[in-house]
Amino acid sequence: MATSRSVDPGELRTAVQALSAWLSEDGPDPARAELALAVRLSLRTLAQDAPGRSVEVRVPPFAAVQCVEGPRHTRGTPPNVIETDPRTWLELATGRLKWTDAVETGRATASGTRADLSHWLPIVRLDS
Image (tube, rainbow, N blue to C red; front, side, top):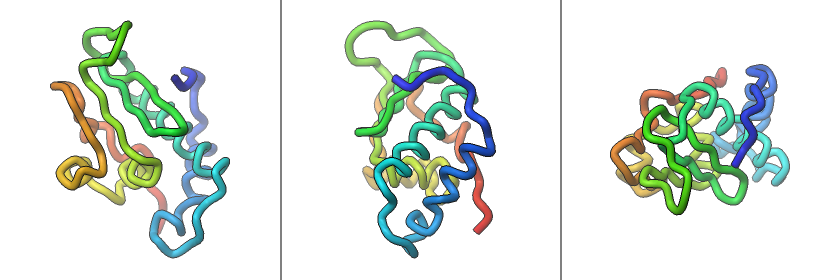
């Protein structure tokens, strides 16, 4: 799980902005460390914006966070799980991809009655 340390919005913006060309499919694949930083910071920001422990959001291989107010989950597989790949997560986090489109096309999986992040997305907007 990612830490609960507060995320500096400027640090988040810088990390995600560094991947902007890649997210627009106009640039090369990012370095693993750059991709990991952007994913981790954006997930931690989500956990700050939607505090709680009823939903687990997983973006393997980089991070997972628990968020969204509701019944706390403590053991085994949580009843509300969201999982996606790093590119899809960052497209969601930046508003380049709508939540419903990601789920409908299978780019994100969401199980459980609380597994809907549309209220908290996008997390960061980049100037195009």
